[in-house]
Length: 65
Image 1 (cartoon, rainbow, N blue to C red):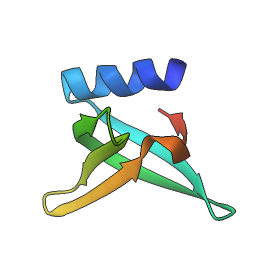
Image 2 (tube, rainbow, N blue to C red; image 1 turned 180 degrees about the vertical axis):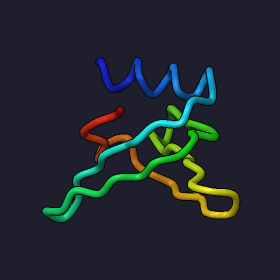
Image 3 (tube, rainbow, N blue to C red; image 1 turned 180 degrees about the horizontal axis):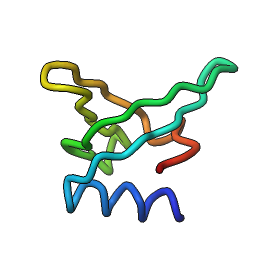
Image 4 (tube, rainbow, N blue to C red; image 1 turned 45 degrees about the vertical axis):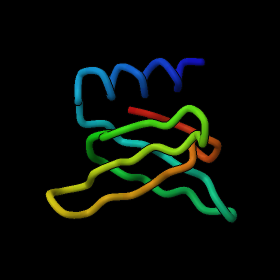
């Protein structure tokens, strides 16, 4: 629940956040701004820098700072 609230705040206020994901036995961190979130597919579009974009499944997010 706390992760969902932090993601919603970051999307609403366009704050830079660091998202930690866990997949295939590895942790990865992405720092940037959430551009959009699709509640139906549970996918978050995340921009890192000016030209780099990632789509991240909400199911693999384990932390938001």
